Amino acid sequence: MPTHGSLTKAGKVRAQTPKIEPQPRTRLSPKRKTRSNYIKRVVHAPRDDRRGGRGQRF
Image 1: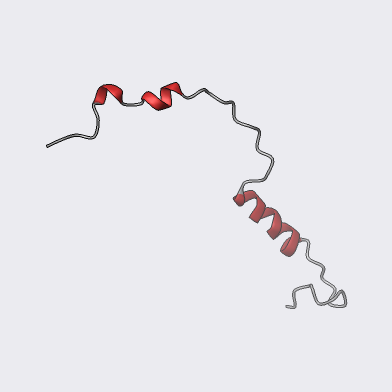
Image 2 (image 1 turned 45 degrees about the vertical axis):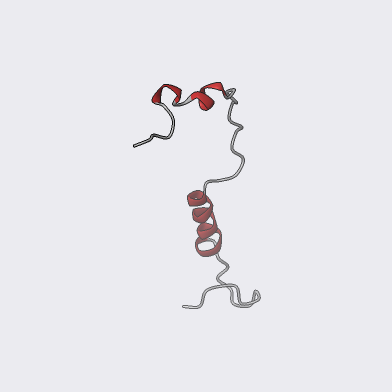
């Protein structure tokens, strides 16, 4: 049964690729972004219904 290339050439292209330093991340991770949205919308939500109906009604 023929093989798809020899094992002696494994990793050749990756080894030749120059190493590039990662750039610092500027955005929040999705989990932290969801948490901050929750805090903004639910925890610090306006309680007054006269403000355009944005408050939650209990």
